[in-house]
Image: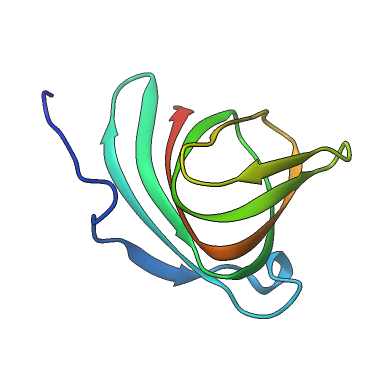
Length: 110
């Protein structure tokens, strides 16, 4: 597939996260899949202002817009702003604290 996407304006499908992942109240995140191959999936994800938790899969992402931070279970903090490239290891417990609506492009193994 040879294609280009405008990840900053792509339409997303929003859905509520499970309540146990939202320590400060309901959060609805948006997602769309851009492409997938036998080895990889690539998509866009958006998180509104607020806090959510997750357990990660191996992922590389690039922040397109917004700001915040990811608290890792080992105590480190990943600062997020446009242009940040993040790498998350599978099994890492994270807390996402979003100060401005955050949009990222992500790549994960299938």
